[in-house]
Every structure is written in C-alpha cells, then in structure tokens.
Amino acid sequence: MSGHSKWSTIKHKKGAADAKRGKIFTKIGKEIMVAVKQGGAAEESNAALRAAIIKARAANMPKDNIDRAIKKASGENDGVVYTPLTYEGYIPGGIALIIETLTDNKNRTAADVRSTLTKNGGSLGTAGSSSYLFQRKGIISIQTDQFDKVFEIAGDAGAEDVIEDDGYVEVITDPADFEAVNTALTQAGFAAEEAEVKQEPITRVTPDAEGTAKALKLIEKLEDLDDVQAVFSNLEIPDDYEGEI
Image 1 (spheres, rainbow, N blue to C red):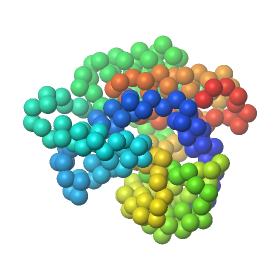
Image 2: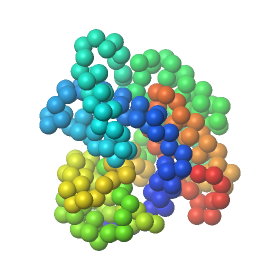
Image 3: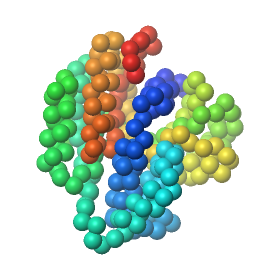
C-alpha cells in the first residue's frame, strides 16, 4: 500500500482556508437526522448514524450539536422530512460531477442545482452518466508525520491504501472496513481531520489553468447551495496551477 495524492493536500488547504463551519455543521446535522429517521437513535444498531457521527467529530462539530440533531430527529412532530437525492453533471473538458443532496423540497433542489450548473458553464447529466467514473471509498485523513505507524495500524485493520503527502496521511478503505479502520486509528491516538465514506474518482482529468479555475468556481457554487451535502469530481489540479483554490 503506497501512493501519492496531490488532490488530498489541496482539499485540506482549501478546507482550512474557506470552510464555512456553521454551514458544514448544518449539513452534517441533516445527515445525522436522516440516519436517525431511517435507523433509530441507537448508535450501536445504526451504522449510518455511527458514520455520520464519525464525520461530525472529524469536522470538530460540538457534541451538543450532535445530540441536538439526534433528539430533533427522534421527535415525532418536528415536521421536516429530508430526502436524499443525487444528481450527475459535467463541466466542459470531461470533468464529471456527482452532487449529493438532502432536501425537503425536491423541485427547489432540482431547480437550484440545474441553474447553478447552467450559469457556471456546466450541464446536468442523466442518471448513470457520471457515476460509473466513481466508486465509494472510506477516506480518513490525518495530519501527522507518523506515516509508518499509521500504515501499520491501518493495514492491520483492513485498509486498502495509505498515502503520504505534505504532512498528511490519507487512509483509503472499502466502505465495509471504514468503521473498523477509523476505530483502530482513533484508539491509537490519531485524530482524523476528515473521515467519511464518499465517492472517489477511478481516474482523474487535468484541465489547463483556465479550465481548472472555472471548475473550482462551479464546484464552490454548488457546495454553497443549502440542500447540497457534497460535490465529488474527477478534477485533478495541475501541478503548475497558480490560481485561487
């Protein structure tokens, strides 16, 4: 298990630079609520809830916020039902997008996603037009210089790959092994800055500087939509790119 991931480092730098923490907490809170609605409030019997809480903790979401989301979803009269919807799209140059949403108004969300894509040079695709370019993987990112130790612990717990890049170690797992690997690393004292099961591209596309800037702008616009939980792309930032990330 070895490798290199420039995009991993860029994600961390971008997150540290422009993360809107309140909006992030709101999005994770919605994930927690959906998990509770679907599988109950008991962590031990609800794998989706455990995964959402792992993600929340990695984002430094306060425990009170987590507990509040669980309690709100456990109530019978909160009146809000969120539905998960996934959209697929493209940016010129062969950059594929998967846009995951949670919404209480499907028409609003569809219109917002379509409008944002169209206004920023993208296009909405049909079901299956982008998803075949991705696979679901557990991603655990840790800021540490102890690569060898993380490699050993993660490998023993079932990780598929461990990548070192610019002060970060990224552990990649099969979704079925994500929780076990994350637990092993946590018990060993490694706190993740990102820990979730997500869509990872099978191959990546590297556009020129202009194409990169346009793609990053569109992705940011989509991420700013209230109903959008996550945007995944197969964009690879060129090594010589000097624009804003």
